[in-house]
Amino acid sequence: YIGYRIDFGEEEAFGVIHAHTGEIVFPAKYKDVMMVSDRLFEVEDLHDRTSMLIDIEGNIIQTSRK
Image (tube, rainbow, N blue to C red; front, side, top):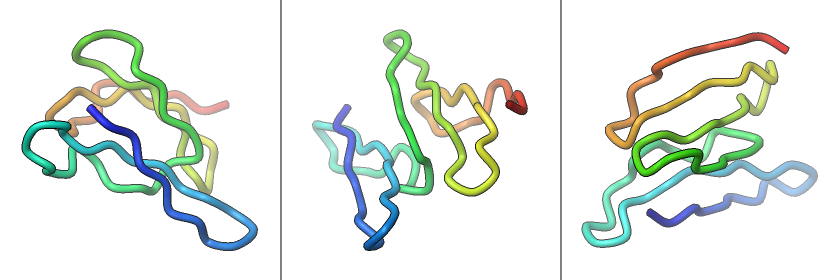
């Protein structure tokens, strides 16, 4: 998997694409992205700072508010 970034000037957003297919796993709409296992990413929503676990298919597994 490859993380990518979109720069919006004062803010930037991160997403993830599949390294072999080039398909978007999830779009760049997160403040932070960290791979926590071979199938899960921890992300933080860009706007409301909600923390989520997302699987490699892009499904939200768990959500928690900060």
